[in-house]
Length: 309
Ligand SMILES: [Zn+2]
Image 1 (tube, rainbow, N blue to C red):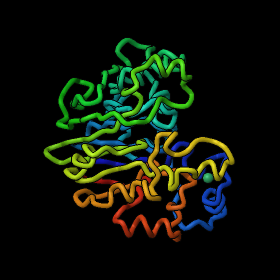
Image 2: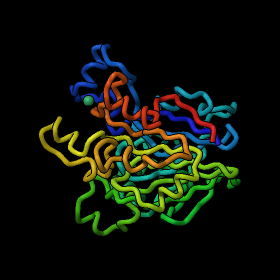
Image 3: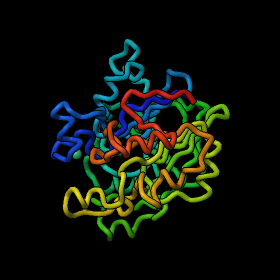
């Protein structure tokens, strides 16, 4: 399975338009020891011909243009090698890009019923995906129930997905009343991909990691894990207010309960942090945090990174 990282930043990207944190400021000044990133986006394919987007970032239009295998190939006026999209949540940075795929192109959208309801029932913009019958073909995803990725023609690709529920809640823009009317376990999922016996874990947003996941992850060839924040109070310290990393659905990388510690015994898979927020000090390749990450055997995902699983 081919995996292309089209974007590796958390919501807002790096730099973020209204942010003057140390990282964003130094990046703009040209004095930052590191790289800009667009918002987290994957593309996967079993054969290099039929592609699937994993989430749909607000940067999707540019991300598609930056990767020629996703460009139209036929001589017909409308064509795309993108057959479907798998959504892990209804967060803006994971789903807004669906609106950019609206040009009457048939598309399979794999999502939990809860995520679909938030997007389609609560946001009339998503009507652009219903302009034609059979345009967006929603396929319900249930945590714990594996499904196969199929082409728009209904052919199996050989890529299988096991969705797992995370402890993350529905996005902050969903009111508490609305959230309580939706299935809690369908708010946010992680994905374990399998193709020809090879496995990839994609867990971009999770405040906790249960022991069963660790067992699953041990059998994977690679893991792309939540690298949003270094510390639990990172945004509060920068903004003066706000929620902790865990309250926002993210396990911090550093600290006694962070992911470096939690995965310290992990030996099997290649370990890569993705969905990295612009405030995270590990983005600075001259920082102590970056040294800690690399010393622990982790890599930081970057736009354009490719894996063959
Ligand atoms: Zn910033």
